[in-house]
Length: 101
Image (cartoon, rainbow, N blue to C red):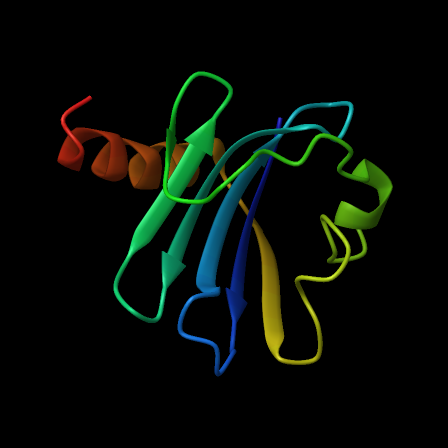
């Protein structure tokens, strides 16, 4: 598995400012959490969804190593980093628990 965190500066309050993603070894996104400037949180997995999120079905695994797990999101106004599985799970458990799952 590969885990990423993107902090994205955007003026659009409906777009995510912080994105946590989990990718499998083929580059397919398994789970994602998005924190938006307007205070909403959206998350998605193959089994559940809250918000407008959908999983990326054709994530480019090779690009993840260059700081771009999928086209169009990170740009000059974004900070990209890899995180550990434990860091991702900590975020995921906060969100899923708070939603009553």
